Image (cartoon, rainbow, N blue to C red; front, side, top):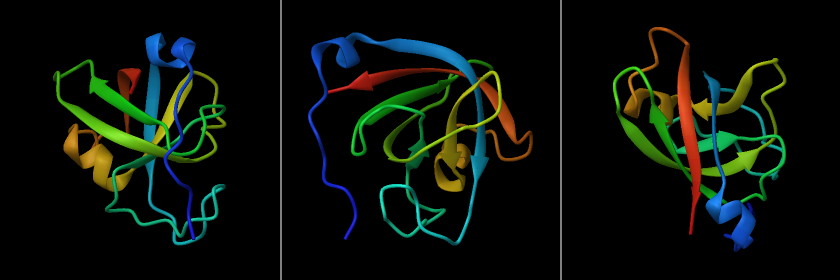
Length: 107
């Protein structure tokens, strides 16, 4: 069950983006079919392949975390990632609920 790690294209590997991020902790299944586990370091992105690993940096404090894409979203304008609660905790955005972040696909 769940998604396997997939390779990224060279365009994805060089891509970087900035925007807003939020966090979520649902008890349901993700778009990839995995059961959501809020403590895992995962995230939702609108189009990156499931299994893609992404380094996320909180622009306010410089903290970073590597997450695996396993869901689709976010669906709110200006947001580029929805992080699991565990990933959000790693970069210090639990209390605020949202953060300004930059991310880059890593190989």
